[in-house]
Length: 410
Ligand code: SAH
Image 1 (tube, rainbow, N blue to C red):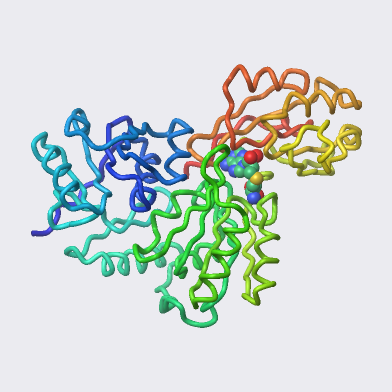
Image 2 (cartoon, rainbow, N blue to C red):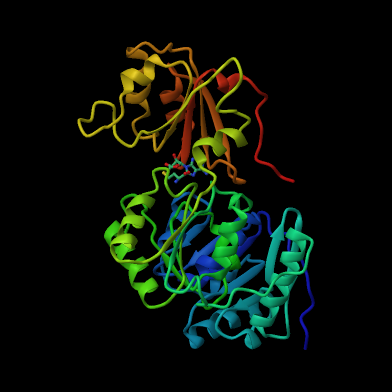
């Protein structure tokens, strides 16, 4: 029996996801992006899913599945290996006439997730009689036609030279999955192993082949985190085993991304590295909010600065008094925690308290929000409005030049 294809409008509708491993990590971003009211049921979840829960993008019940969890749901995704547990979820869904996708056994499922690719407003979804590799091959061919207008060249064979035994450090862009570079996307599609950060655009993971080894290297504050040494070790070990490793990072790999350390670790181990620059949030988040970081006659300089340490911190390498004297644009990353001290230091060292400031949270994504204030008021505004990381603080006269913008929806 062939499935009947359908596009589900999930905005505001409950979708229950049972299981919190890598399969769920791959499926959930697309559900969240579709605006679904995602209820995740699993005693444990990956750091990426934990991050989505912390950010309020989904609700997580940290326990075993109960049949009543399906009450009120429109769709159920089972992403657990245990067939008996999966069957119990299926049965609860069937009883309530809710469609159920099963990662463990598609033939026991009442709904299939097709292989998909998104090109702006066009979504291509392919099923192939239960053969996911064939579905993905057709999806990839159509995807290439859509992006290039030509037939795709022969796909890169896994582990084939020159990829074999190397690492690509790929900037994933600021959040909108279409803001990865073409090269980054191509290398991601050729990866055997992907080591991903929390800030790398989650929607890109939805397109990975199921046999790709997806390693979550999230550095979630106060949460379980692998040390940088462990990440370096993973890159080197997998590359030495002959695999093509893509290290997917948020924004640009060399802008506060510790990409340099990873290159050094690979170089020390004799592992070849390719660096694929990315669109940095330092520039892209302001841009998506309608703020040009430079403008003729207004700002002839742009300084990108890390605010992860307070200006008073003796470890800080930032010359805040010098930044206060400049009249151009400051783009402060990781600056929310110490925003009060940063703004106070700039004012104390001569920058006007009336200088316009914008704080762009989740820039370029559907969740983007912008708080506008001045140097004198911004810390209070950010607190009052509950702005959360990731956010870029952009300071300077460029902030008020253009009408406010939303992330591109075309
Ligand atoms: N390499 C990344 C930056 C890593 S540091 C880049 O080039 O963009 C992490 C900081 O980047 C966050 O604390 C936040 O200040 C900023 N950031 C990353 N993604 C963002 C986004 N979508 N919107 C706003 N700020 C973002």
